[in-house]
Image 1 (spheres, rainbow, N blue to C red):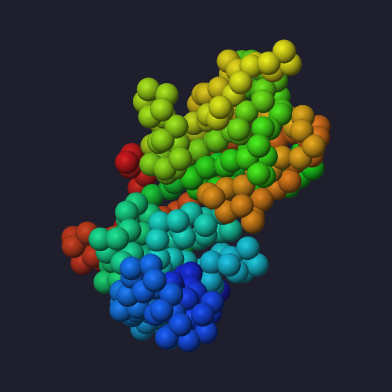
Image 2: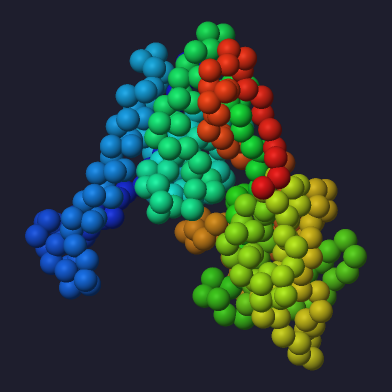
Length: 321
């Protein structure tokens, strides 16, 4: 099938300001009241738009091209032959990951020195080089056989009514307004009823974010690496009462093992990677089963100078990080 480049991006701050304030003058006044200048916002806007334009110019003319804004990801249908180019911040790669299946993702850092670059590993030049390597293939070989990439573990929650939700960093389970959540939690070894501020279940990729802060607060728990087929989970602020306990508050989930959460509140929610609008609603008595997702994110790594000139296609790798 015809290969397609899918450009994933989000609206720039300048776009959002102009949408909210209508004119550049009003946007400039708004920024000035907060000690900022429009020039700085304009520069970041220009950097992002130039990166997108450079990427587009590198896409072969016989490829199809599609653009997707972050807000439209849940409504976009990705195809097996797609090469997904995410231009922006690390969080945008995580947002995209839950909607794709086995497509190669090239994360492009449009603002070097500003982003952490854990997931947006490519500069604009790196990305155009990777596109060129894929374009050189004359036999329609899958893109993941041509570009060195990592397979990053994802977490998946499955409700007993068949609904599922995946995330690259972590899933949160709790009350939608972060009030007390009541539920029973069950592992392979034990179970108990709890009341808490919710449960966080995360991957090695998420170990630099929410999981890291919880781990530090608990004395530095060991967290999985990005490619480890394991998850870490923590209960937030569990407290004992005559009806609830607070002993089963953390652990590790390996592949094939699950954490089961049965709701004992009127309503709880689960959402992934901080996107509260894309969530599952859990009602009294429903059980959410959380484990290592079968699907992994195939995240491209920039080609080294040696591999970039080599006629032999790169193979996939899953190094620890």
